[in-house]
Structures are given as structure tokens and as C-alpha cells.
Amino acid sequence: MKIGFSSVACPGWDLATIVNNAKAMGYQGVELRGLRGQLALPLCAELTADPAATKGLLAEAGVELACLGSSAAFHYRDPHRVADNQAEAREYIELAGKLGCPFVRVFGAEIPRRAIWGYESRERVLLRIAEALRELAPFAAEHRVTLLIENSGDFVDSQAIWYLVDAAESPAVMACWSQFAAMTRGERASISIPKLGRMIGMARVCDGKFAAGGVESFEMVGQGDVDVPLLVELLKGIAFDGYLMFDWPKLWNSALSDPEKVLPEAQKYLRTLVDAKRVDLTAYKGDKNAPRFRKEREAQPAPL
Image 1 (cartoon, rainbow, N blue to C red):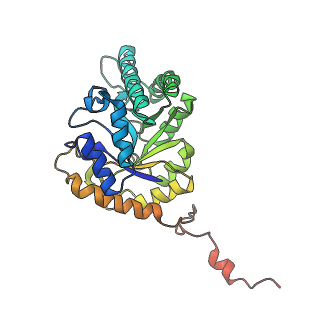
Image 2: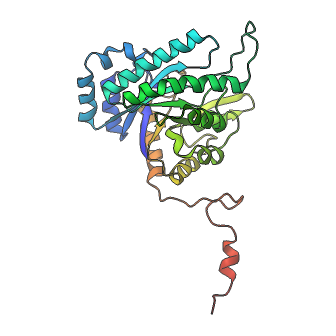
Image 3: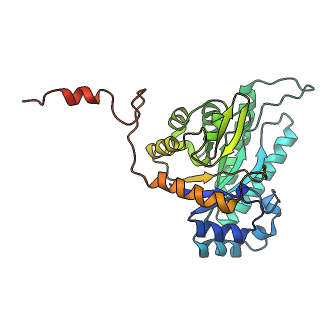
């Protein structure tokens, strides 16, 4: 597994600062979700003016551009809005192709609830999202890019994401799994990771405290309610070799600690988990790390 961080953690940094700090702090890659307040990456001259120079900056530092994070979502009832979001996704895919970036992230988003339209079933909305992804998949494959559908909004559960990836029917569509998002609906990693398995192209790592009403606070990774060590062990169990992408949403919450403090601590914590010897996990309650009936077997006399 590789370790990266998203630019949402450092909204004030330019591209060179992101890349140089990633190298200095021991990260292997970065995800760009906006640069210095501009969320529309295809409009960022730092990326688009000279793609060769951008690739050179990354290569010289030995840091990968792992993902471009878009705002595209395909849940809308209005087909024109879906088409607009597909067009946005295509712009990101083209940019990713020029930069040699393997992933573009999009969202599942929500079930439309506008009164003028009435309510739609969850299944109908999922079908519409899947159709949009299936239409984009050949374009992504042509540019050697994989679309990552992130669990979000009304579709944070692994069942929904499994359906979307499966229905897209293309290796150019995979899952970007956020266990933090899944925990807002009470789904734990022991359910999520085995269900999605090799569909996971990237795992986002965020931690926090949860209350009945949802997220109570964001916490340093390993100090909240998300069982990050278990998440990493389960990812090892499915032979996941992609990115653990640290997600510290300072872009959306300026009161959070600064990246200069948070990013080095997160890297050290995640590196310790990744480098630790794999633990054999079982599904038996009360015995997470060893086969059931071990003591009983040990107590039996050796065969003659």
C-alpha cells in the first residue's frame, strides 16, 4: 500500500509546495482537489499551461499525482445537468491523461428531493448514476484513466457502491472507498472491505467522532471512532496495493489544525500500520486475531 494526502488538507499551498512537502514528509503521492481555492482543476494554469513541466516537477520529487478530484455527480433528474456533469468529468479525464494521472474521482451524491419533482426510489437514482458511469467508461479507458466513484451523500454504503461499479461493466470504473463516510450510517470496515474487495481503487482515510446526528468532530487519524488499524488490516487481506489517501478537510473547515502539523503525524501513523506484520483476522466474535477453538486444540494430546 502507498500513502498520499489530498490537497483539501492544505488549501493555501500551490502545486510546488504540495509536491515538495509531500516528498519531505514521506508521502508517495497526492490527490488534487482544487488548488489555492480554485476547485475546477482544468482552469488551473499550474496544471494546464505546461503539462510536461508539471510531470517533471512530480518526477523530480519522486511524488505521484495519484488522483484528480472533481465535483461531478450524476444523480440529477434533469438530463441536461447529468450531461453537464459528464462533460466536467471528461475535462478531468483529458487533463489526467495529459498529466499521467491514473484516477479521476466523482461522486454518487444524493436522491433528489425537490418537491416540484416528487420523490424517486433509491434504485432508480442508482440506475441513472450507473448509466452515466457506463457512458463515460470508454472515454476514460481511451485516456488510460480510471473513474473512481466515491461513497457519499445518500450512497455511503458498500452495497450501493458495489452496484454502481458492477453495473458500469468496465475496468475503467472502480470504487473510492471512504470508511469515514460509511461510519456516518453505522457500516463498519468488516462489512465494507470484504464486500467490495478488488473493486476498491483507492481508500480515503479520515477520522472523527460520531454522534446520533452525524459527525461530531474531525480527529487526528487513529484518535476517532473509525477503526483505522482494522481498515488497514482488512485492506491487506484483499491484497490492496493502491493508495491510502489521507483526507483532512481543512478546505471546508478552516478551524481544523494546519497541514504543517497534521500531515507529518498522519504519515507516521499510517506508515506504521502499513509496515506492520499482517494479522490473520477471523469473523468470530471475541477472537479477532486467531482461529476459534485454538485453546481447545492446544489442550488436546498429540497424536501417537
